[in-house]
Amino acid sequence: MIIKSSTMLRNDYSKVSALAHEVDEPIYITKNGEGDIVVMSIEAFEKHEEILRLQSKLKIAEQRKISGEPNVSLTDAKARLQEKYNNA
Image (cartoon, rainbow, N blue to C red):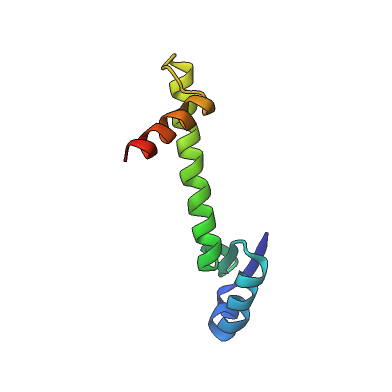
């Protein structure tokens, strides 16, 4: 975990920005010794958002499996897609 002060962010933004791109993880910014905000590169943020979307999809799939909804094997899914492609 990287922690920097708001003073450093204000006085040396370029250094904090470079650090955010270098470490590819959140940087916690403090104000008066207390946690205030989190800063991260756009790339790290987008990666984090994609992980959250995938986790949400996995959770839905797990809930469907637990509830007994029918599922499709990979072989069947490929066959269905190939059939649709051939008929297009």
